Image 1 (cartoon, rainbow, N blue to C red):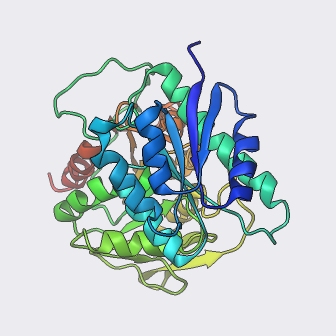
Image 2: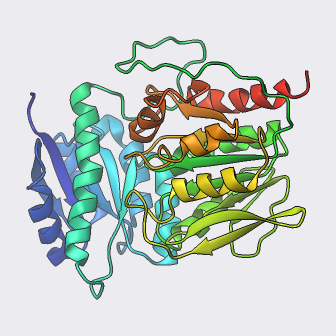
Amino acid sequence: MGEPAKILIVDDSRVFRSILEKMISTIPDVQVIGTVDSGLAAIEFLRMRAVDLMTLDVEMPQMDGLETLKKVFASKRELKAVPEILMISSLTRTGSDITLKALEHGAFDFIAKPAPEVPNSQESLSRMLHAAIGAWVSRRNRGVAQTSTRLTLGAKPELAFTYTLAKPSAHTSPVMAIVIGISTGGPKSLAEMLPKLCTMTTLPILLVQHMPPNFTKSLADSLNLKCNHKVIEGLPGTVVQDKTVYIAPGGCHMTVKTRGAEYVLENNQAPPENGCRPSVDVLFRSAAQAYPQDSLIGVILTGMGNDGTPSLPHLKNKNAYLIAQDEETSVVFGMPRAAAATGLLDKVAPLMRIPEAIVERINMSKR
């Protein structure tokens, strides 16, 4: 084991800086080496000391988290090192908008500050910090690159994980919908991959991204500007249509059911599954029940945990074509790894090859 990862905390609240420092100090293999109260102070600190990871408050006076992040990357020649950046966001719409832009500009993940009046808010914050920073430390210790979503096409990296694909089966029916589950690293990955996918198919896309309320609306609005499909939150009573991406609203499960010849979305407040609401499993199970045999494509992308994997047998029983992102291009390989370990997948591919893998299945029914 090498030296502990060096962490800098950036937040304009002295009290919250102290809370973060105490919580982060309990995470193995990390060391808080400084706390500062502004983006400008963070830049000055980085000019003097090498930092591996920086927690960055989103809403700060004078220079907010997004501007600070941009300044860090623009000043990289002046810094001892360019740290990975974990955004710490409020649950406000402004906070979610800035956070989404920061993720697209290079932050590796975010944590939403629980409201102080919420019961057990500090315990919740501590769990989120341990999960996000713990996953980052694990990847750092394995030597996996933190920003590897632009894998050169044709490259054949040596991967630490091997998997077995499902035996090929016949796919002769037209595909009716694509269902996708994604978590850590999702906003940046979707901003890269989804516009490409939307140029290659007109099929509806039903998507679960693990996020709180407000954040999924910001995500939908951001992706809507990048894709030639309409991208919206999947609200109750919405009829599923082609050329549309439906994102599960934060804090709600999203399901799909039949209503006559139509497919209609519903939301519910059932308990979290795999610690998540929205949960990929809830969407996948409902899609497997609603859609006909051999008419679905299921995709598991970057994320922590195993959400989506328990429902893969439901999809496979309907002869769905199953795809997961590969290890090299995943920000966190937890969800794709769990899916690949089942032996039910038809394809594992780099992020920017996922659209081609989807089109490959669509074309099978045209032969």
